[in-house]
Structure formats: structure tokens, C-alpha cells
Length: 158
Image 1: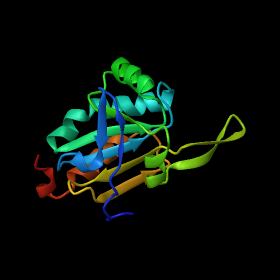
Image 2 (image 1 turned 120 degrees about the vertical axis):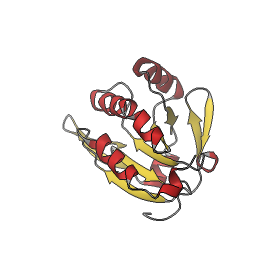
Image 3 (image 1 turned 30 degrees about the vertical axis):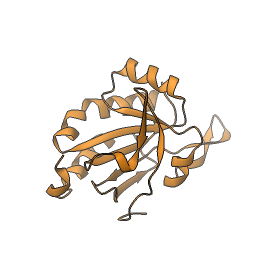
Image 4 (image 1 turned 180 degrees about the horizontal axis):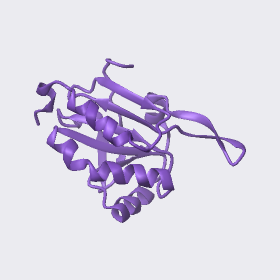
């Protein structure tokens, strides 16, 4: 999928909105997939994207987080953490399947199906320019920001 256009998709979003990829502005876009609202790693990752949000915005880059949680759960998480970006609900896993982020994982000695923490950067034409899979939270947001800085200037325009 790298260097290929990402097929359009539409899912419910926080702030009582619907997110449609094709309607996303011509900005670069970070899409980060995370396992679950209000869990330690997902909270830290979201906070780090929140804290770097202005740096991404200055580069003409939007951010969205996505998990299988409900919009009600996402709304509470977004408010509690003061996230300036939207969280998307993929309860039917259609976007997770599109990005191939559903994996079997070990949790407390049991195999469970869940989202593998992953991040994708799309340019303003919705072409996938970079992906990180099996993300470790520490240092990740800074690495994504450094990559966004390398994108061509044309795609930084609003």
C-alpha cells in the first residue's frame, strides 16, 4: 500500500461528525490506530500527539486517532485528555481491515484479537507515504513529526 492512494472510507467521529477520507482537506494526515480508550499506553500516545499537535499543524498536517471503541467512549476520552483532534470509531473494523491492523496478540497469557498499534502518514492526495506497525509509544510521536517535516512543501499548503 506504500506510495499508493488509500481507498476512501467513512466512519463516525467525535464532535458529532462523520469523517470521510476524501473530504479531508488537502493537508497531510496522520492516522494512528490504537487498541483502546483510557488504557495506559493509548493514553500516553494520545497525550504525546496532543502535545505535538501545534507542531504538526504548522506543517499543514492533521491528526486522527482510531480504534474500535464507541463514539460515546471516544467523546469521554477526548474530553478527559483535551485532545485537539478527532477520534474515529471503527466498530465494524472496516478501516482496521483496510490498513491491516487487526492481529492476534497475547494478553495475560491468552490469544486475543485486537488492534496492533500502528501509524500511517498520508499526503494531501491521500497517498500513503509512511507506516509504522507494532509501535512502541516512547519516542514515536517525535519520529512521526520528523517524517512529516520531510514531506514536499507543496503538500504542506492548506
